[in-house]
Length: 357
Image 1: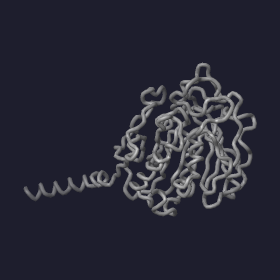
Image 2: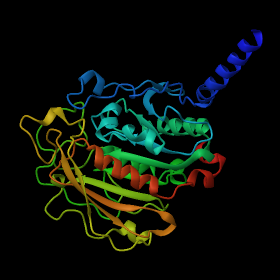
Image 3: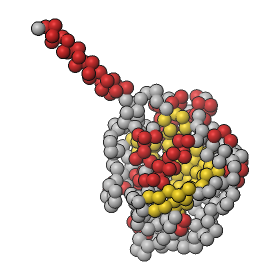
Image 4: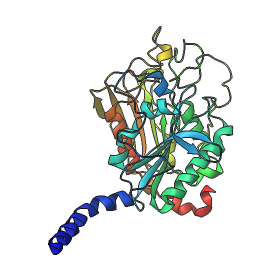
């Protein structure tokens, strides 16, 4: 009888071993438990305002400022991942950005670790740089630089301008493998703005994504360097068709030329039957198409410059009949993620241990 019981216990232990092993080897990052669906995720429409402005459960321990941290719940200690730092636009919040470009929905499929921080003034400036650097340093330490196959900056509007600024700084210049600009400026020649871009609305509000409309000298944080960065990295530009003037995206790209890419290919069509999550509620009365209307299905055109040197990716993506603040739909979001993970990475390994200190 005792032998029979012992055999049963052994069989039970063997049956439970895979699950126990998986639990033991899953990694928790930033002290933030992983959940499915991700914490504070918006519903498909009408995201509650208190959820939109939530600034996240992760704590950057040196500044004590919070941020969102999303990663695969079954992440293993020795697994290769793509690290993403995603910056919101002016007047906005991390959780708005998290749903404007909802790569959190693809973190498991494409093995992404996504940090989405917040500016306390809702406008990024060099005062925030240490906070951003500390987030990246902490994640590199936890994940292990050998396990980060690529590191990408993502920025919407003024978050894109900030990406353009910090990618030239000492800390980031040697480790950034790619930058995705979500209506945040285009390297190698930007399109012009629509004549009524940003007109209307008042003070900054949740979901605001760029500088208020008007003329004159842009405020601090809204200027863009005109010269190309000295370092090489992949670059993807996205914009709403209605944000631009009638000339649209320039046919050529100085950045593609720098990376020795081929001529821009024919644009592929990406069709979405499902709307994005988010929009700017503060500018819907009256509505302004160049700034952005309510979420709805859409079509995007993606044109890639082929055969860039060293496996880099350069592409232009135009979302047809969309403005500045309409959240990206699922298919165009996934298409952008696929481009990101297809590009060469490895800068963190090449930069050495002192690159994030």
